[in-house]
Length: 396
Image 1 (cartoon, one colour):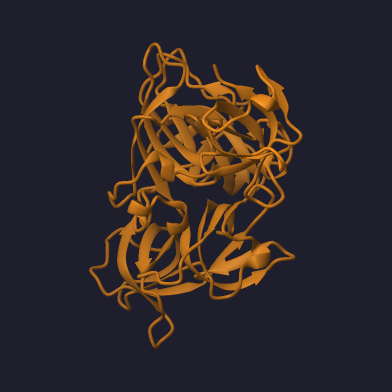
Image 2 (cartoon, rainbow, N blue to C red):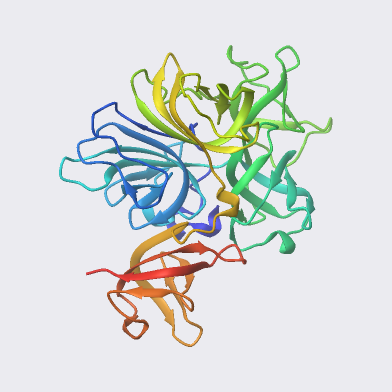
C-alpha cells in the first residue's frame, strides 16, 4: 500500500487487525446507521464499533454511516502510526467510536485498516475480471477502486495489495487494489485455513501451501482464520515460509445485547432463517418475511441484536453494491486541492472528481476554486479511480 500513503508512512499499513463486516451500536433507545450514505449515528448512542469498506470522506463513511475522524488514532494492527489522510476509498477498516450527545455523527477514536492479501500476481484474466495473488482467487467488478493500475494493465509478477470481502468459496471480492513497489521485504495474507498439519508444521490458505517453524498455536486448525507474514519466495519444497503467524478472533464485536447492522457476503447458507454473513451467525427465524434470492455469496444487510454470539435478525435485505447506480454511492467532503476548469475535474482528498455532469447546490461551477470546501456525491467511474459527481454542494 506504499503508493497510497504519506511519505513518512511508506512502511506502515502492513499488518491488520481482525474484523467483522459489521456495524455494532450499543442497545439504546436511539440507534442510528441505516443503509443509505446520508445516515448518521444518532446522538446519544455510545460504544460504536464498525467494520467495512470506506465509501466516503469528510467524516469517514462506512456501511452508510458517518464517523468523524478528525481526532481518531489511525494505525495498523501491528501498532504502526498512520494518519487519516492515509485512508482511501475501498479500504476495509475497523472503527471504534463514541457518539457525543450533541454530535450528528459518531466520533471515531480509533481506525485500523486491514487487507486480505499483499503479494505477486500469479495469474490473471482481464476478460473474466479475475486474478490470483499468493494462491488466493480474486474477482473485480465495477465497484473495485484501483490505485496506479487496472486489471488490463497488470502483469504476472506485479505486486498488489487487495482489500475486500471473501465469499462462501473463499474468493476475495475486491473493494480496492493497489499496485505496490517490487522491493517488498515480505508479503501478507489473511484467510481461513483449509488444512493444517501440526506435526509437519504446514497449513494451506486458498491454494497456497505455507510452512511454519514456530510454536504451533493451540487454536490453529482447519477452519481457523489467521494472519500470516510470508517470505517473498517459496522454499525449495514449494511451500512459502511464514515469518509470523497469528490466529485471529473473528467473534470480536459480537457482544450480547449489542444492536448491530451487518453488511457483507453470505459465507455459509443453511436456509433463509439460518446463515452466516462475513462469518457471523445470523438467526432470521423470527422474521415473517425474508427476501427471495438469499444464498451463499449474496451481499446482504442484516439488522438485529447479538445474543450468544448470534445476530438475531430484525431485518434482512439483499444489497446490490456491484451494480450501484444511485447518486450517493460515494461521497467526499473536503477542500478542493486542484482544479482543471477545462477538463471539468478537481481533486478532493487525493481523489479525482469529474464534475462535468453534476448538478450544483448553493453555488455554481464558476465558484469552484482551490481551497473551497465542497461535498461531492457520485459513483465510481469506469476507470476505477475517478469519482463521477452527480451533485456538488458548496459548504457554508
